[in-house]
Length: 272
Ligand code: KIV
Image 1 (cartoon, rainbow, N blue to C red):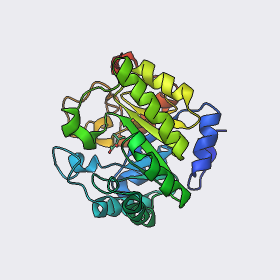
Image 2 (cartoon, rainbow, N blue to C red):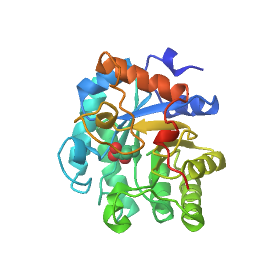
Image 3 (spheres, protein in one colour):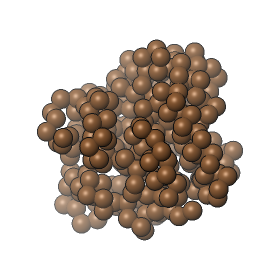
Image 4 (spheres, rainbow, N blue to C red):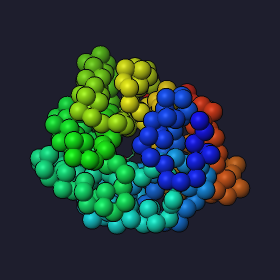
């Protein structure tokens, strides 16, 4: 199966079929209708309305000030602009950690705005919440490794899962999220060998960012991949505007590079 032949809105089942067929899934963050239209036209399979909008749209230093209303506003805009990509909305800091009921209520707002799945950060401690949400009709994507909402606990934006004990924690958390019913898992800024082990261990889709080439797919922050604003970026970022004739061309190059396995390369990868 090639996703390129599907012209309607992609579903969770379509992504699962790509995963089973071994085809890499391409996800971009997206925050507005114009970029959504452009990413759709380039064949990107999933768009994440990330709380990274706190950084790239709102100009904050962290994702912490982002609200459910912010994510709902941008989710609705992305939904209006796209008619093909699978839409995932991030649950912002403080919108799900209190109780399963709080998480469910806020997830309902994001689903009503147009999301087909919500993403939340955390491992075992979120398993009961994930189970509660999935049982009530909300598909959930987990997020492990570097979890930016915990930046002050982590002591900065640092590579996670290094060393045996830390790697084991990531593996245990991944299994707990899968057992709770999560159907997708973002792995951010962890050694490539660990991402490979986690991906091989799970039956659900893993999406990497700074996690090497062996996850089931890759997510790129739109502003990073298109070098907006120009300047130094994290090690795992590739500037797809380099050599591209337009933003559309850059987006097509990003899709091709993930699909053919040339992105991420060793120069974009952390080792244990
Ligand atoms: O908010 C975001 O952009 C994210 C990605 C880094 C996965 O969560």
